[in-house]
Length: 169
Image (cartoon, rainbow, N blue to C red; front, side, top):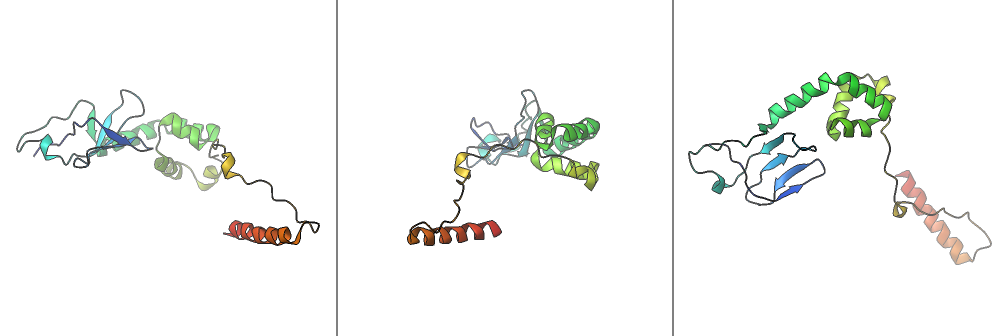
């Protein structure tokens, strides 16, 4: 039987731009490109029986390739641009380099381990971190005071113990 190609119009995308067909019977997965015109890679074929008739070959749409050949092409691309990628890692940091070269989160570490020794890797900065939101920060904890009401003193000690235990975990 031929390749099963999904023609459903709705896709659920995750943070890595991997789309799963919204039709629960289909289950086709695709790696959608971040830039217009790049390849769409079929990661898992459709399970919809209605998409393919028995014995009928379905031609793959232009721009589609199997995931393994796409991964091979990406590997060749990274190796061709190794020097520039490494230079960017040191100059811009990990996050900016990933974004510039469109390198997935799990791949950048593998490339670093393949291309750089431990000492070189330790010099790479993660890159600019997203600022914490106000809800993530606690207000400054006040110094203990013997002038407080005894119930406040007891409550302060209870909270201090909880914060200290959380910090040790």
